[in-house]
Image 1 (cartoon, rainbow, N blue to C red):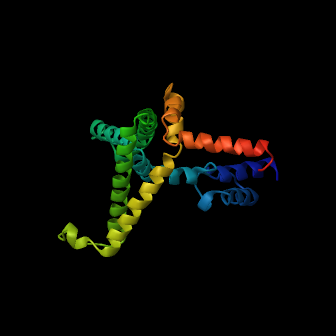
Image 2: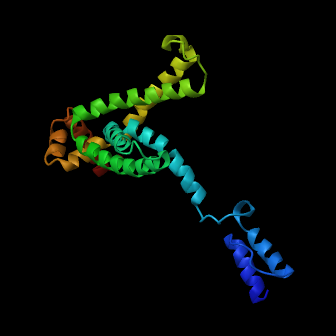
Image 3: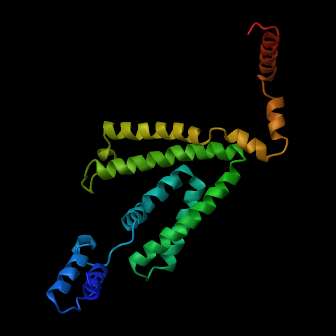
Length: 227
């Protein structure tokens, strides 16, 4: 391929107009265009499609994270209300992109704020209940939104079915165990952060003496060669 053909091929591969004059140059131009996605346009960088899908799914991801971490969810909600108020006269796509970025900042801030609040038992108990209620509401909304279409005039109770109640109940039970799973080992992490708390939890553990006796008996069996 000579320089003219190579230039025509590069023009086609970049989506530029054909500027050659010979049949060979036009063939090279068409060969370059064949490398473009969909046979035309500017080639997209690798990973662009995955990035677009992620951006479109971010509202769902933020919603789930807000249900799992209610303080972060409240911070994101307050930020979203502020963004919509400040950008009321701006196009929707720009508002969406700004909201996606700013909500990520709000999520990170709310997450670390929630980690700090985990030091208090009352907060962990309230959060456990909030997680169950929020996830149950999300399951309820998804069940109403995707499983059936209703006449807008029908009341809430007319829309309820045994299957719907069962799905929401399963969602709440799953939220209970998921919350316990997320908080597993939390007491040990909190103890490490608060001076003296680890010692106090060990000192006033009602099973401490029984545990110490079992460990002493095990040490004795190991020393005597009976283990």
